[in-house]
Length: 90
Image (cartoon, rainbow, N blue to C red; front, side):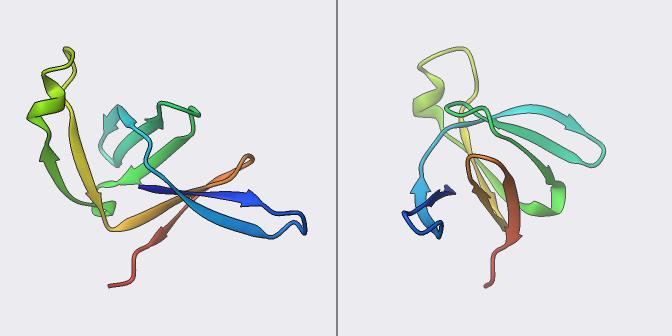
């Protein structure tokens, strides 16, 4: 789940959880690129950002694409003008 930064009337960032779908766009030697299907934001993740992949066979029945979950070691944040990634503190 990504967190969206919406500015309030004072210009302060108010975080909101966004449960959007992301699609793996590409995989290379350094990691993967994912794209948000709602707002088209792009995030580049290193392989060390990914804790685990879990399949989602029920949603995979809906269409020809494989569906699943990426459990991340990072949190993805975005606003209308930028996207940034920070480590999750455990």
